[in-house]
Amino acid sequence: MSEKIEIEDIEVKIEKDNVKRIDENWHERNEALVSRWRDHCVSSCKEHEKAARHFSRKNKQYGFPTALLPAIAVLISACYEGSNLKDIIAPITFLSSVSSVIYGVMSPAGRSEKHWSFNAQYGEIASLIDAELSRAKQFRRPPDMFMAEFGTRINCIDGNAPPSPGMGWLPDIFCCRKEKEEKMRKRMIDEIIDV
Image (tube, rainbow, N blue to C red; front, side, top):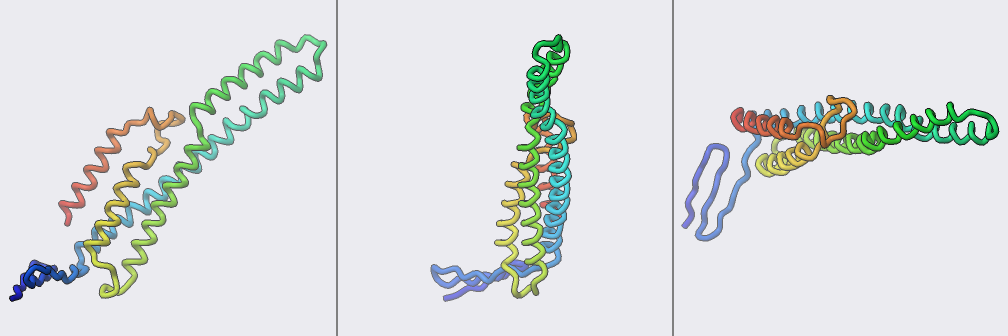
């Protein structure tokens, strides 16, 4: 005894205890949602690239003085040991310590690397979505499985992504996570309402 049930785009056949499912078809609504996800990934990819370049510049600005100032102080003190150059060495040593503290608090190299990593992750997802949407509809993966996988991946990356350097040189711990979480929650609700 088999019974056939049709629900919009999904067709389900029930045979005794077995449920055979014929996959959902691709249509304009789920293609539009996946396209919005792709656009979000591309814009986030560009944003993280910009942030990574920003922190690379900061790494050079604060990294070189941190390394060079102690070397200059040692060189001056070694070359002019008998002279009265303590007035020059003391400010250089002080600047060196200040530069080291700023560099340590900022950690621009680590932050740059983190943004490059998220840039790559967003770029990969955008490329995979492009590849899937470029296939003919009958050769694509079922949209419900595709959207479940990529929706989860995007939400996971969005939740772990570091904030942009809009707050200047402050470390990530000082940036407001609540605003980011609220923005992500609002985006998810808007996507659900649009579908």
